[in-house]
Amino acid sequence: MAERLRALRRLRRATLRTVAERSGLSESFLSQVERGRSSASIESLRRMADALGVSMADLFEPDRLPGPRVLRRDERPALSFGVLGKRQLLAHP
Image: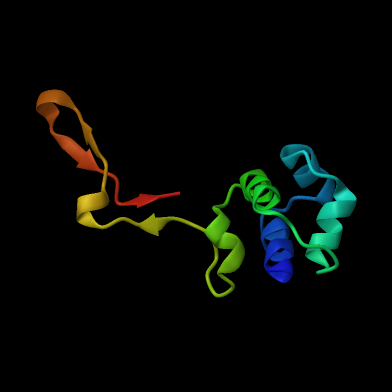
């Protein structure tokens, strides 16, 4: 998970300082987590994920880059445009 966190941060082109400011966690703590020297609580992981703009699940999926996820037909939200019809969202960020 530590390597994944660093990879996501670099993918987002964010510095430790940026993630620290967005998450309210210290740079030193984030560095320790990225190097595997410290463990993060669920709340800290949530804050890190939010700061990086990813889901918590993305922190634990090493083979998949975060991005849009395809939605199944019954999960797609529909946008109605009155008499013009409606559109369905096929993926979510």
